[in-house]
Length: 342
Length: 240
Image (cartoon, chains in turn orange, green):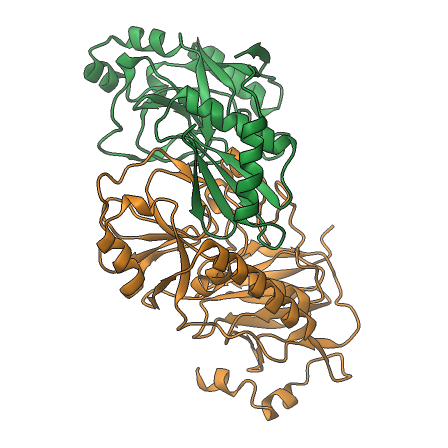
C-alpha cells in the first residue's frame, strides 16, 4: 500500500528521482547517475530530516507543479535562489523545510544562480532500489519512477503518509552558487593527444554552455581544441567531469549519466569539488577553466567535504511553531528577491 | 612492463598498459583488476577494466593518488602470471535475414557469402575485453580477419535489443535498443542485462563466448522461455 504521494500536475522539463548514485557497477557498463549537484542534495536531505543517502527529486531548469496526496508532507527545497510557489501565492524559499497538507498545490521554480534544485521529502520517496540506488538512468530505464522522468498524472509514492511533528529546519547561510568562479581541472588523462595551443585555449579562453546539455554531458562552444594526430583512441574508462574532445574539437563535459567507456581523448577532468558548480550553470552561461595538480584537487575535495559538513552542522530549528513562519521570512527580506524576480 | 599512471581528476586514476587492442594487454589489465578486487587498497571504491587500461575510483578523503600509485606498484610486482580459469558461454544466435539487416552489405564488402560469414562468426572463441557503452554491452574479439570492416558510414538511430553486431576487429551484443553504428548480422534471444539478477550482467570482462547458430523457431522458443525466466543459459569453467 502506498502511504502517501505527490501528484504530478505538470512534470517540468526533466524531473527525476536521484540519490548519491549507483556505485559499483561501472565495470558492467552501468553509469553512476545520481544527483548532478550532490552538495544541494545532501543539504536538502538534512533539511528534510533525511539521511544523506535518501533520494530526492532533481529539478532541471523548469520545475514541476505538484499536488499533495498525503495527509501532510514535509519538504525542503535545495538550490540557490529556488522557491516553492503555492497556488495561494505564498512563496517558500529554498533552504527551509515546510509542511504542506493534502490538496496543497505548489510549483517549483529554479533561481537565476542555479538551473538545478532538489526537493527532498521527509521519509523519502518510495521507489524500489535498482542495483542499490533509486537514481533514474533513463537511457536504460533503470531506477527512478518507472525508469523515466516524471510525467503528468504520475503519483510519486512517498514513504510517509503523515509528516512528523516537530520544528522546521533552515540553513542560516547557504553556500554561494559560484556562478562566476573558474572551474578547476586536472589535465589528463589524454592531454598529450592535444596541441599546446589547444591546452592553452582550454585554460585561457571563455567557453559557453551550448544547447546540447543534459544529464549525460554538456557540449561547450568556444575555440576548437585541436588534436596532435588522430582523435580516435582505444576506448578506456571515463570519470565524471571528464572533458572529452571528438574530431570537431568542440569539448563535451561529461556529467552523472555519462557512458562508462569511450573512444575520444579526454583533455582534462573537472575536480570533484567543482562538479556541483558546473551542474548549476545553464545554456549560454560562460565557463572558464583553471588547471590544478592532482594533489591540489584532492585537497580541494577534502576542503569541500569539510565545508559541507560545517554547513550541515549549522542547520537550525525554526521558532517553536511546527509550520514555517512566512511572516517572519517576509520581514527578514529572505524572499523578496524571489518575489521581485517574477 | 611499460606501465603509466594517468591523471583522472581527484577521484580516479588510470593505469595504462598500452594503447592497442590485444589479448596480452587485456590479460595484464584483468590480472591487476582481480588482484585489486581480491584485496582492495584502502579508499578504492570501484575498478573498471577496459581494453588496455584499468580505472581505479577512490575516495580522496581516505587515500590519495600518490599512496595508490605505491600500493598498485607493489601489487603488480608481487602478482604472478599464472593461468586463470575462464568462464565460457555458448550464446544462441539467429542469423536469419529478419535479424540480420546488414548481412548482405557485409557479404558485399567482404566478398564472402552469407553462409561463409555465419560460419566464420560462429566458429571463433571470443574474449570479452570489457563492458561499456550501455549496461551489459560486451566488446568481444577478435573477429576473423576476413570479417573486419569499418563501422557503418550511416549509424542507425535504433538498433534492436539482442542484436549481434560487428565492426573493426570486434563483435558485440546490444543488451538494450539504442543508436549504433555497427553492422547487424544476427540476434540473440538471451537477456544480457537484468538488474534483478545477481550478477546483473550475464558476461564479465575476461569471459569467453562462442556463438551457436539457431533457427528462427528456436529463437522464439528461447525468447519466450527467457521472458518467463524459464531459460537458464549454461556456462563452463575452462582453462585460459
